[in-house]
Image (cartoon, rainbow, N blue to C red; front, side, top):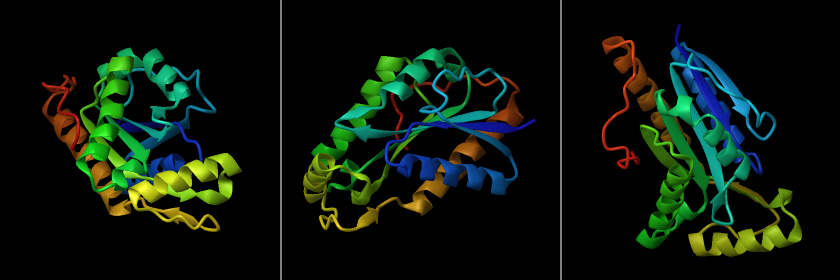
Length: 199
């Protein structure tokens, strides 16, 4: 039986929205999908019965969620022996300079090193500016980040920057990769050179 798992941690809800979009895309392809918010289910322990696993997280103050980090560490053995993918949600990827993009990639690589997990497919999606959900200090910080990244600074509105076509392509490519490998051999073996993580 083909079954995918999506686990995510979210702050203002954009990572949840992307995760649910991915779930819907996999369902449209015709496969079963289970989805969990590890903020609500942080003690969830997964088992070796998923065809593929997708993990999603977001960057806040230069770091990923501690809950997500702990969850991945607790499930690292299963994650390291299953086809897996990771997506990061952040605004910094909007910046045109290479330094900013390298910084975002470094956050991801440091996360993988910390949790000892190197998924086969990784990408970064632009998130959203949800000024209406921020307190005054967070709103001020996010406005400064938006200015630097070229985003909107009118705090009376919310803005979404996620490229949904890119999310769809990421999902389809991962599902295809997993299914094609499953058809060749019933046991998944990790791909070589896990440091080549961005696609």
